[in-house]
Image (cartoon, rainbow, N blue to C red; front, side):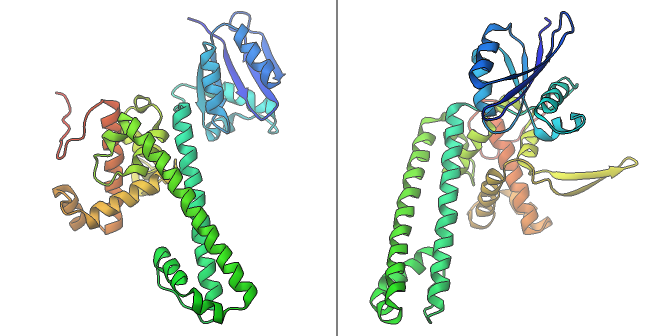
Length: 340
């Protein structure tokens, strides 16, 4: 069935739309406001709408799908080569339209509201932790200037500060001592905020069967399970576990010519946060697990520790995809077999 293809460049207030009528071949380039755009698509026959995967793209995808249209999200780096002339909203809309019509063009998986909300909680928690680390390190540096040294580690260092408050009052100038007390109070507030967010994340994990399933994988905890499910979106969007591992950036980069392929370090594409969680989980399995498994033991004997850790993270990502895509339970020692 023929359907009109649209290239939509989205922004906060101005939206540029490019399309060609499939019946007449007439070319259109129109600028809309937000409400005008929704009203326009509500009156049009179902078509294919291509959007650059940027801010608010997932929201637009859900809105336009509810109106009966097929929506595909295009990564910005795939649309950029088709921009002709100067970069403008109109040129971007035409480039998006051109890109989505290319054979085999890869698109970005969609996300539900709950998945987006979960990723937002992860981002908020990460920001709070970074700020907490900055505050603790600043306290260490400022107190060291007055001859006060603290134990290593965040909890040990803060605990020592609280124990030595009477001593610090005699060492520090009055205005600095009051500022230190205020900073400690601020750190207590940050800790409470982090715990509240983690409680919400844990509640969502308990509600989601997908999170509970992949949490059985060694090295996958609450944070990794929820972040993985929310980042993956639709598991069946990926053709294989290797494709999902490549999406996370846990596969080697390739460089080759003349039929010779050279494998380099991991690509580090995709979501840095999820990749970090997977690698930290793999490191915990490699060095802390009582039963690493024969595969892990053999890998550690043949490869450097960091290479083995990344390989384990890759395996964890593939296993998680297989569990979600095929709706299975985690089985220790499971060996996949290619149908003959």
